[in-house]
Length: 430
Image 1: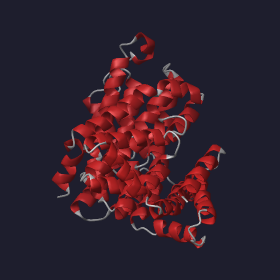
Image 2: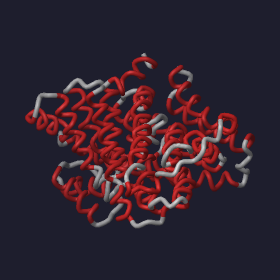
Image 3: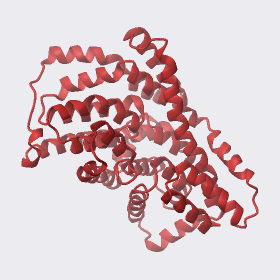
């Protein structure tokens, strides 16, 4: 059964079938020709079982809140605040892009939403300053990876719902690595500004002054308060991650309609339709990965994988580095969400066998998988930002590798210095 499952999956991907349909059809082929004797109804049953999760309810709510924030003027005010805060640094527009993505990550939870919302404003601004369009698109795509690392995080919600790990603790575990990515990228921009090839990064603006900075902060305060509501509510136990998504949606709707007054009643239909389309795409992938993952469990693929790993080394760090390498290669060809759902059964076994701290292990896995969103040829963020920058895909690929190295370095720092991940969860989540 296993060869039929994997071979049909790979063939369908090579033929250009969407990842969700590839997993669903591969599961059907394995049931029909694998000789296991299971009825085809298993596909429907396992799809429903995976989606029948209270934790997954958070996904459409956070997606709706992200759409409301983009339409309600929140992203625009965040960008203005970031511009006043770091616009006087070398590579000023690039620095604004990174800080904006870092802040927006705390309110959206989605890398695609981050790339689209911040990129649509900042990529044209960087291009007007003479920035290379391929480098600009690569920068914005890499900065958007902070979206699912700094809480809230769609990917951590899915990982937690699949593995039973506390979603709130995963959220806390992503704070320091996410901020570390942003600060590292800002330092990289300053370093590149000294190189002749990046002459366009030498420009720096004039500090607007503390009075103007305070004014832009006041204008953005309601947007900046969103992470406080989400994280504070989860930490204090006022609501769960799913309820935090509902609170974020209500808050974004209230601010957009009644405070900033940039959302009108007639806009709600478009906003909800866009959110529904995005949510259905995410949940379709998640649902059809259900029977695929179940079939891997039936043939004991996770147990066999763990047994193979134990023959390679008994050092947990070596095993974790091998897993990271495997995930980096896997996400070069498989969409990140699908990859997470497919390997979750294996990862749970590995985490248990080698006694990894579940939060430490989970956050590292999520970050490693997210690097796949900027690795060719499947990196979805590369397509989003290259479309906004109007550059060829090959142009962005030439410039993405320094950022991939930086992201990988952050993952390795988390591997060798576990408190980067575990400090906040242990401090705040008991």
